[in-house]
Amino acid sequence: MSRHRLRKDVLAASLLRSLVLALGLLGLLVCVGATPARAERIDRSLRFVAAGRPDRTIPLDVLRARCGAREVRVDDPYYHREMRFLACPIRAVLELGFEAEAADEAAGDALERSSFLLRALDGYTKPASGEVLLGGGGFVAFADAALTDAEVVPFTPRFEPIDRRQVDPSPFYMVWTGIEAKDAHERPWPYQLATIEITSLERAFGRAAPRGLERSDRAWRGFERFVAECIACHSVNGEGGRVGPELNVPRSIVEYREAKQLKAFIQNPQSFRYTSMPAHLHLGEGDLDDLLAYFRAMSERKDDPAKPGSTGGAAHE
Ligand code: HEC
Image 1 (tube, helix red, strand yellow):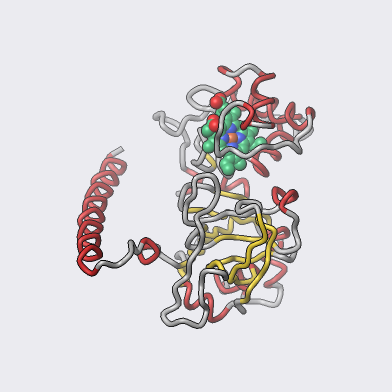
Image 2 (cartoon, rainbow, N blue to C red):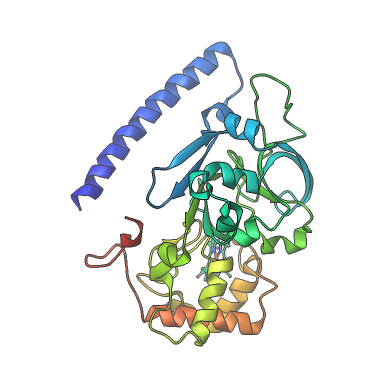
């Protein structure tokens, strides 16, 4: 409890500091008549998190010099056209970031068998298996090749604003070559990527699982689907992304939305309201029923991290 209050005070103080700093910077910019240099305030480094060792942070300049950086072309599902990026192959990035863990010969293999969380600045938290990440075609982009001159010193990476919210995708944007935009949902494409965490799914999302049910239960299939396609943006019992609303506590989504409407929304939210939740047209009736079975199972397994006595957050500490 007191820890939370303390954190709030520290946060308030640091917010105030940032505000003063930002105002100072703004004044400076107005004085020199420069363009707003949002790009300069972004921390262009990638953080690598693994249990049992201090986090490792690699600045872009180091990453770029050591990853075998190159230009790649992708059929981009967010910009809706072909894009060219300056990028590092994912394998090189993971090997640099998790170097120590992967020091032996079985290194590549160990990464392949691991699970990862891709964390973005806006709270998007996408799980991805090593198998998918290292399966070929994946890159960590750090600049739009059409807007950025790789030869200019100091190196000044630029991106066009992305997605419906038109945000800057910096510091990193994961992209895939050889994948058509219509199949993009089969790969992770996090923008504003700032942290890569190596972890197990149980460790990351244990409280969101329908524990105590037979593995053959439909709710488990729904859970797997939820982890693959929804948990990047939505939490259940407080575990998962923070881009969209929590779906289980204090009230489960199936307690205030009618099943038929819920399924229609999940499949095509744009038919209800203009929203940043993507459509899931590839989900059939059976997949949607799995998801609802999962939500119903979780409505009987509430564990609200905001309530005293919950196991909230324990898995992360
Ligand atoms: C890229 C992020 C993102 C992904 C992925 C995503 N959602 Fe959402 N979702 C949102 C946002 C943002 C909202 C809130 C805005 C809205 O309701 O339109 C939302 C709203 C919802 C709602 C609330 C509807 C209501 O008003 O009651 C439900 C239910 C939902 N999502 C289910 C899902 C399911 C199930 C999946 C996976 C198949 C999923 N979402 C995937 C971002 C996402």
